[in-house]
Length: 330
View 1 (cartoon, rainbow, N blue to C red):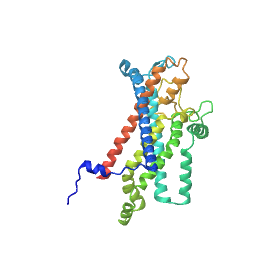
View 2 (view 1 turned 45 degrees about the horizontal axis):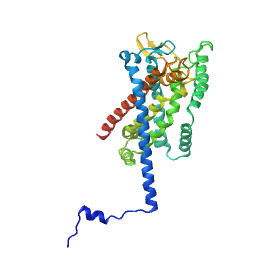
View 3 (view 1 turned 45 degrees about the vertical axis):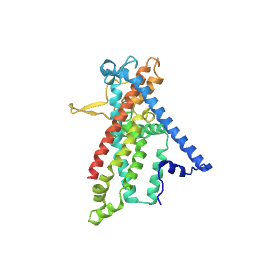
View 4 (view 1 turned 30 degrees about the horizontal axis):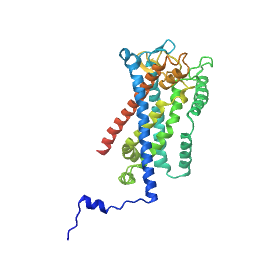
């Protein structure tokens, strides 16, 4: 005896579930799907508006907007110093936050385990992640500028009327921003380290390697793609934040870059100088300009440049992560 398995006969055997729980589940699934697409549409609309409004100003006059300084009360000129300041700030922030965050995570995962000390540190990190960003800015002024900066000036013999370190500067802004992004780096690095199988550590230790050799030659190389993922999130957060640098280093308008020449030849970021930053520049254009409507094209163009810069930094980090992942697989 054979059974007819044609589609028509199979569909006639399907029993549809119209119970209240199934209908509620279907409704919630449709609602969440609709909200997700609504969010995607909103983001696409937002990005499209910035591109349409901002790109013509950037492309005018052969992209002069990208490398010239603002002039005529911010109504004319470009954002060259702000782009340089943003890149310099993110670079310094990464150099400060990444080593501290990775070493803290290594200590928590590989050395302390589930001790009370690790629980206290994790609780402190979680609390740090919930602090508003403006509080970081006020803390940066009090701790880095007034306490550490003026302390260095007193120790090195600089006067309070002409301080070298006891004033807003890019190094204090980067240090404040590093504190802001540190929880992101620590949490993501911890997850990357915990994802490495314990058997790899045990095999390395069984071969006679020390714990540090196991961490540095087995665990960390395998975890680098995950660590870079956390770094991408941290860079994105840092590049878009303004509140922490309001009082610690960002300047309203500067014609010069925060650069000094070492031995009169090699240019280097001067950590004691103030700087312009794209997010702060957009804030000033939108709120402090004498004619806000007149600066509207510059606002859209500066926002377009900031978004492009953030995407470029993320894309670079993603490429690095892919390269490290290929090496780890080999």
